[in-house]
Image (cartoon, rainbow, N blue to C red; front, top):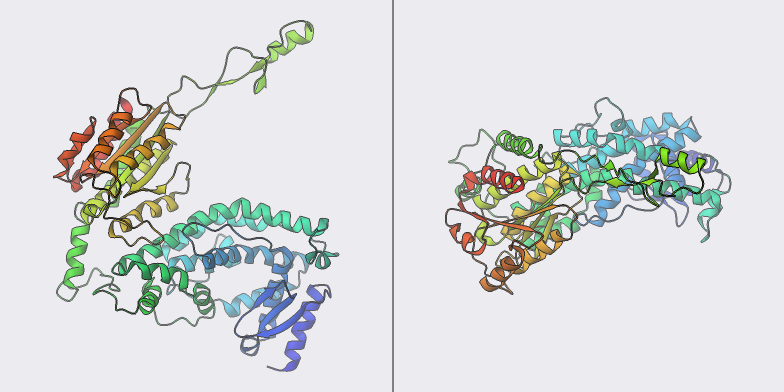
Length: 567
């Protein structure tokens, strides 16, 4: 690299930033905009290896960030701060490039050169959540054609689902006039120009970005589940790995095409967890059995555990069939609500009745009751809450069958727009899917993540499978459901064991059922005993289905829900 190349880039920065005293500074393998010092950091190794045109594209890119990037995404409960930062940056990259290219059309060639120089042909060695980051940061992912960088099918589908929201995010741009905006950056009371920049960023962050984050969070949770299950012998290491892994470095390596040899999606995180914890992984932790694997060569314990866990599991096609069956059974009971307008008139309301207005116009002394209101009081509505036992006795086949049944019910209720929620319980309620969550991918990942609570290795989880405080948790779930406005409120409790909690026992469960299972209760309470030996559930719940085998559970849950809501 010659000193002249650096001078050329300095002139590019000065031109793009309107001589606003922005300077370039060399850095170690990093490009970035430093707003505090008005400095664009330059990777000198890249300048030597990639050439001036590609690096001029990076300068233009960072100048775009300086102009349009403000604020930050709110932290997700399941996301480390570093991942939230990466997602925000991925959404901002096409947005800032769109602005700089519209303001300075000649920069587009530089931006294209930079993309060509820094784009890796494949991201398949990265975990899916990081593949999504790299894909979303590439403006090519906003178009209809294939992404130039190879990603797995799951990520391709996620990028397609979020394309409209990411396009909308990119379209929310500040005004193109640069006059005076650099001076406004350093003030505590921004002038109108900087206010407009901030307002545009706030609109983008509050709308489309939130919807994209739901899809990304589902991918990250799936990666975390892979990590946690492979490292279930040391739950603390999972937490350390999720927060301690240098995700940013992995993305940078991927962008440079300098990834290590191909490996399974989360093996890098698993190995880091092993190193942090100072102990070897369990046998077969990093093994992903393939269709051609020989049982004799695979780890025997891992194989038998997998067979036990999959006991009673149903195929995706059968689960989809059960969901469609439940949806058909409930559709006549809960047609789409179209609130009618009340035939009477009122002193106030949502819209005027034209005939009453005309009479009032003709006779000012007539009644002022000219307003109509929406009427939906006679329409039937329902809300369903599924409460699942996550104590250790639910391990292996039971929790798999339970969550299969829950996913079937959730899919059907979502299709009918019936409000629903899913909670687990140990010594406390564990929210998985609160009322009002509308992101299907995130909902599936959250519900599937409950199985890790049974093993005590859920990332950022509750992880107390030794307890099952049925009584207090049933009461808390019923209280939550009783606050809903729907006419029918159904609480389904899935359990396989006697109440043996940290703070309660059988007496507390009997008391909770007496209160919330009575005919006068605003909640209809139904107990479902999972497992051939769970016949005792009928001794606690007057309305119960007991002794359901894991193989029969999804279909049984469908029948229970259909009959109780039809009653």
